Image: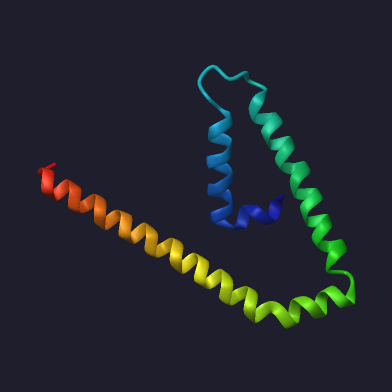
Length: 100
């Protein structure tokens, strides 16, 4: 769980997730339940990574596919970024046209 503290994207994602679970009037124990669930998920996921990548065949497969994985993720995030820019331009145009 501490590995995520150094990653600002992970921190912001979890803050957003926790804010969804903490609606007005939520019981006082709910943040602790969310954090406990987060801790359990982290242990399960990172243990799974450790087990899977401890096999030499999996390490080789990943090393061979790394360029394709990185390229696919680069395209995905570039597309997401362009979508955000396009939406910002569209919304700014709407604000300029209405005089707001």
